[in-house]
Length: 176
Length: 122
Image (tube, rainbow over all chains, first blue to last red; front, side, top):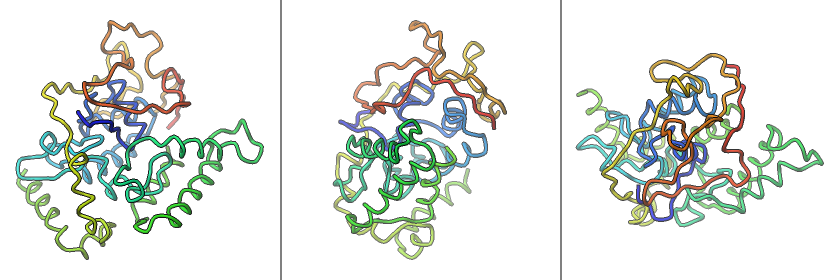
């Protein structure tokens, strides 16, 4: 998948693709997504199916059951006549604002997929707050960082959108 | 198959009706900045004619035993990802390899990508 300097907005899926639990070229299928979540991250079967359904349904093709992990690869995922299928980069479909280590779509000229080192360092900083240096990125620390990202988006992103799907992504920090 | 095609076509038409988009959790702003959305470098991935599907689990490297439609193990203890003994000559053991040409990825700098043991009761 020739995507210039791009990655996808989900580092866990990126890692799985690096290790060939998902197709290395980033064009994956519903079955691969379900299996990779379980085999790599221990996600439960029901949850894995739910997340894969959302990913393929929102950003991929419901007939071929293919989805691009990053950029738009409609020519390789879509059933003839359907599309466009933006891949998981597609804003406000599976991907949303207030990501842990990615910029908001409208704050970075559409770059909602590249890893942001500054945001990552902020997250690590929150994971060490309160003198609990050994706690790491536990539930409480991640919740605090989530709030920080939400407040930052509210303050700086005039196109900030936090809809029902965003709640699911927020919840990923707890159930994953 | 026909049902899926019709459903997908109807859903695609929904983008023409902002109020429909809003009822499924999208925003009018998604359609407002068409110029941003239509940037060429965000529209398409390069074509890769040599798509290779993911390598699933094997008898030697079963991981958590998930192979769709069969669910994985209810209890998946000591699941080292990738497998601890992983010969570089074995393509099936999920060692990290260089990306497909032109595909880049980012790695979590401090995250333990390799060999992190997992014991995940479900």
